[in-house]
Image (cartoon, rainbow over all chains, first blue to last red; front, side):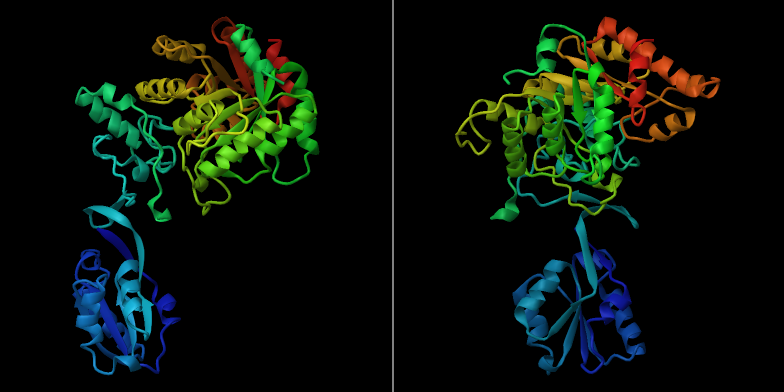
Length: 205
Length: 287
């Protein structure tokens, strides 16, 4: 899931104007799960901004803002007088930018996009994937060494692993410790000895 | 110069002594050079750190060249942290052209440890990939497969931490680094000869040359402080020995000196870390 966090209200208001009506757009997928852009959060934002003197014309949670066809169909063509409005988006950077692509009105982001994460429980979400396009989970017993090792060590741990803990984030296990434990338990010590080539960086396409 | 003194001595099984200097944060190198002058008569080569602790300092490549100009053989330290594969290969070619022959590849302390915590950590290549890259360049091509106009040739080193646990991971790391082409190693400091002997036993199947780190603990307070540094584990009995001594510095010199004496019997060399206490290196060596 794409993990988002709420921006501080002061940081959002810098970009809003009181003179234009405001429409709030939320996201039915990741932002709903993150409790940053679902029905509840968008409704609360509606109440808060009304109290602060904004003319909130309405709000809608769409499925999903990161699809320009959905945005055009469910927001742009649905809202009367949209060209006189400003939009506040409770979605990830992809959703927010998609809305920017299909309208010329002022679009303001209410969220910061943090990472692709895995939820253990509320308040404990960790970055698990960096969308490199060259997944090596099958070679590494299901652990992404690029994302979960701060140094992205592809072949072996750095020298800082003590008691199996990461030198950069000592609360975390060294991911190579996890890989090694699993390989050992599956009898696959040989498998850990190959040479992992450097990755392509797909942003460069 | 074809082959470094360090390489020649190690290949001839002659005991080597290295030390390290930290390039300063700035262009005034006078204090750094005065430390070099102190340690020069006692060492075979001097390591030049690359923004260690992720603190911005003057370039290790520049300082390595300046050491060569002063007749001192450097070990050019290069981390994976700050440079992508273009810059790494470029600097490596530059190092050779400037006369550098000893190179030590390390992953590098993560930016959050230092004074520029928001710096982008690069790690385009990891240590094992970078070691292999240098080996490829020595064979005449860069890692894009393009032929080089003149190939470098180095005495290629990497780091090892004999106190890293579980020890199987340290053994795996050593094995992979040797396979990738590392010819020598310098280790994090140890404080008991047994730490080295145990580690050596576990890697007997590998032909590894480890120049073992020895730290001068100038005081109990200092020992407490450096035990926070990743990779450095100071045993309780050493801390007790310092704390209960009448002259902590003298005790620290004794601890280091005794270890060097023992290592002379078992290891190819020692790497003395005497930060801010370089003037006591001769005392350590004469214990």
